[in-house]
Image (cartoon, rainbow, N blue to C red; front, side):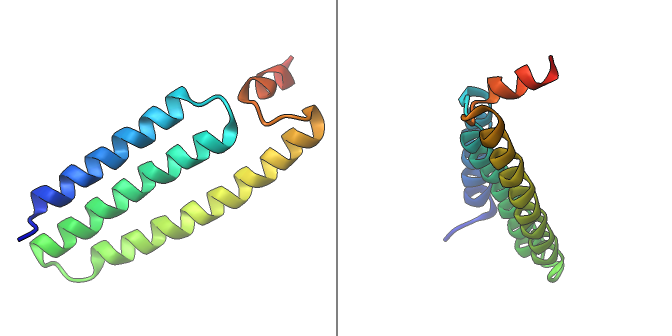
Amino acid sequence: MITLHHYLVVAALLFTIGIVCVISRRNAIGILIGIELILNAANLNLIAFSRYFEVGLEGQVFAIFVIILAACEAAIALAILISLFASFGTIDVDAAQRMKR
């Protein structure tokens, strides 16, 4: 039987992997993947708590909103990446630091 504890462990692993991706990656695509993993961990927690406490569909509705926001974030981030690549010829995050100067 899969309990709430199992869901929370998987969500914690996803969140940890996402944080490690965000911190350790230098290119922007790796950072975006890490952010998506963090958002998926939050979705898993929302749905698990919704199912465990039997409060209805609120967890699933919030998860849908998070998925919509993640899709919008990905579209905007990819537009920024295309602009960064057009300007510098690379998607290295350090190149964005050079844009300030």
